[in-house]
Length: 121
Image (cartoon, rainbow, N blue to C red; front, top):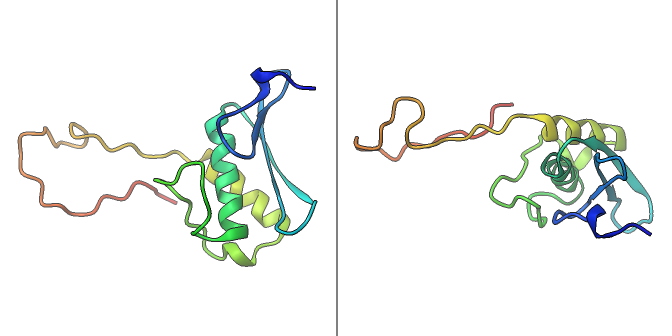
């Protein structure tokens, strides 16, 4: 039995004895699972789970990161291996952080309210 140090605050994520974080997801209405891989951080493993969850359940699912849900084209029509690949890509993609002092904006100028893209796929 694994101790409390192997648990994670993220759904679909657990820690191996040797320190890697792993993720897997169950197929709907089945006992079968899709292995999503091993990751260096629980956040990456949780992002992989979110991507697979999107592919299986769509945009209305309860994600680990509801403020940054994945948007994967063709998600609902993917095979197990395609879901695994999409999850790995999403987990390892770099999330762009936008701050008020980044990209020339100093915080003392007016902002016109235009949209900002946080993802670049």
